[in-house]
Image (cartoon, rainbow, N blue to C red; front, top):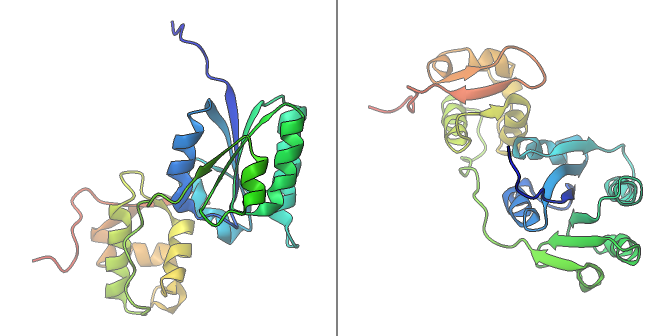
Length: 230
């Protein structure tokens, strides 16, 4: 039986349209200094926050509209504090608009921890109970090649991307988003879709993907090696 004292619950709320998912590890590491980050939410448009899912965050997608992510984050922060009695909340953003939220929660007797980049305005920093900088260098996915439609280059990029993702691989929806940013359009390959492409040669000798579904992932085969290796 575990008789160790239970850590107090902490809510971690991230402005996903303001901060990159590359800060996810630093945010959670710092959050554990204050308790158990049992609530982990990131807010924003689907395309802006998709990558956070691979880091243990619940995605809270917003409708189109000005400052929609900021407003929803603030509403849910107040609900967690006043209805669910969460005493410590972490707001990760470099946006000064959250200074109003920080002041209100602090005055209500809650602890508001801010986390943001060096560009965070002084108003938000000062309003927080404490503020943590997130400017420490974070691990990055391998740099993509120049924008190209060549299947060989796409295969090399996918294999390199999966090399830093570990045994769990990467969600196919996230891979699609990252590949598009790198200049690859799967619709311009002969296979036209990611599933068809992943199951075509030579990819099928290097990669394996889950059955169809919104959470399907792709992984490197244990025996996989770059297809241009000797």
